[in-house]
Structures are given as structure tokens and as C-alpha cells.
Length: 150
Image (cartoon, rainbow, N blue to C red; front, top):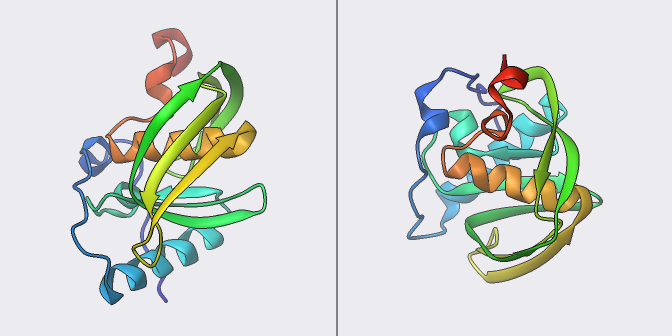
């Protein structure tokens, strides 16, 4: 496994919409393993491929006792509202309260290419939504007023 470089705010790849993955193969799994190594070294709870310079539609999560990869994730339902403090490995040492749906249901392919579904609330819900936003070229600071962003 390898530790990948994390792209920081201002890197154009962070604003790109990630492309769907057609085949889950050994090369993709090796990339996901590298993403986990990178996230662990950086002490994160989630990481999207954009953050390490790739436009593949894959993100990883390690939060609330759950560790998993999401390939081609999509939110199929979202309800409620909840604010939580968020940060981002691509925007070091910056944190802000972000309001998001409180409960989400997500469909995705897992590490082995199997269709999976997750219902998440609390911190896990925020993490999943944060990483899917990355895959759509959206950063948590985009939810803030211009005054808070500055």
C-alpha cells in the first residue's frame, strides 16, 4: 500500500464531478487500499478519490465503527435536518457547522463490486454525504455564507 498526496483547496480536481466506475477489479481495490492507508495516516474519517487526484467515483468511510468503500454511491432518500461540525482533509484546520439531512439511504457498490445499501444517521450520515459531495465537486465550505467562508 501507498500513502497518496492529498489535494488541498484550490486544486482543480476537487471541483470535478467524478466519473462512474464500470468495473470493480484488482486495480481499483488496490487504489481503495491506498486510499485507506492515506486516510489513516491523515487521521480522517472519510476520503473521496478527488482528494487524492483521481476522478473515479469512489469514497471510503471509517466512522462510528463502520469501515467501508462506496463505489458509484448515490443518495436514494434523505429526511430531516441536522447540523454538525465538519472539517476536511483538503481544507486543513478549518471547521464549521453544516446543516444536512439527518437520515440518508445510500446505494453503492462495495469493495467487491456487490450492490449494497446503507441507512445512516448522525455522524455517519454527515460523513457519507460529505464524501458524496466531494465526488460531485462540492466542498463543505460551499454550504457556508460568504462571511463564514472568509
